[in-house]
Structures are given as structure tokens and as C-alpha cells.
Image (tube, rainbow, N blue to C red; front, side):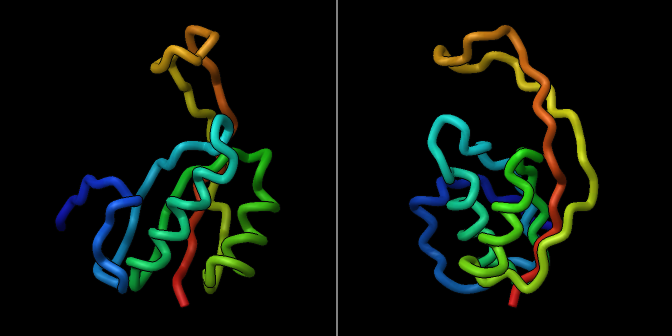
Length: 109
């Protein structure tokens, strides 16, 4: 098993290089669609499955976009979770927030 920590905007690989991607992308609240940029790259570099957290409130949009626009073969919510997000950045106004998220499994075409 290998781990890769990188900036997806600077990822040099353009084809499938890993079996499975497990990620916790930004939720796209501050920068709309940020999570889908991560999902796009994960689906490009994976030959198998992508496991990812996304806000439950965006469930239908995530599924539709993954299959229609990002070429995912399948998009399945495995479970719904509560994600405790502490204030990490200056723009965070509350000390911590519980966010309802979905754990997804996407498979690649």
C-alpha cells in the first residue's frame, strides 16, 4: 500500500495509476464545486473505486454530476455520518460545527 499526498492541481499523471482513492475533499461550501474537482481527478487516476465524503445536502447533485459529467460508472452512498469540523481557518466563525456528510463509493469506467 502506498500513500500519496499532493496538490491535485499539480498532479502530473493523466491516466489510471492507482487502484483505490480514499479522500476527504473540501466540501465546496466556500468555493462552490471544490469537492467535484477532487472527485474528477480521483476518477481519472483510479482503476477501481473512489471513496469520498460529501455534504449530504448535495447528494443528488454529486450523484448526477459524477455519472453524467465525470464518467463514473456507479455512485453509491454507503452511509450518512456526522462530521465534526473544528474552526481551522480565520473565516470559520464558530468554534466547531457538525456537518452531515455522505460516505460515497464511486467506480470508474
